[in-house]
Image 1 (cartoon, helix red, strand yellow):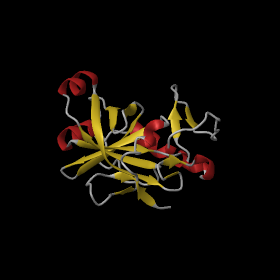
Image 2: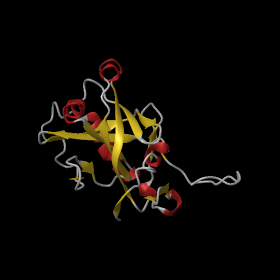
Image 3: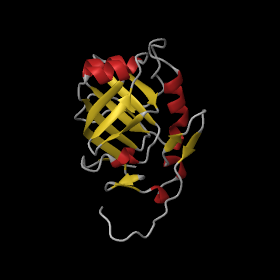
Image 4: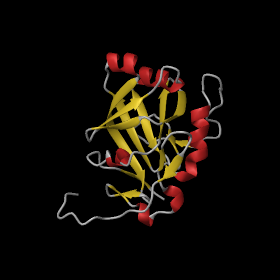
Length: 190
């Protein structure tokens, strides 16, 4: 496996498949990771994330002005559930067994094993943040596991099943993305 930078013009494709996500942030040496079901694209270079007022991660995002969206894989489901069920407000060592790493340009924790990572710089909007708990971020850095996302494209059919993205459909039910099918629709764009 190699973690490779993703061209920012194609980074939106990491979220285009609608996966379950995790969000991480760091401020003043304090870091956290949370599960996040409501994260989506706004155009091709912005992300909107719902981060509730009860979330410890929200405080870190508000103070630092950055967050990372992680695209977890099937092999990370225990991690996703764990960070979603445990709060750093109540648990000082929440991340003790979560493998994290950092990319050179950003002092933000990234969870090992994800299919992709998007660093987002918050575009401040007090009304959205306070009334709706929505944080808009511009994608300023992106990386992927090249076994499953390479050259701006998902390659699920060639990747091991444990690297498939996970999708939440409510009621505690998750699905892994399935096999691809190409439809003949004429000439298209990359």
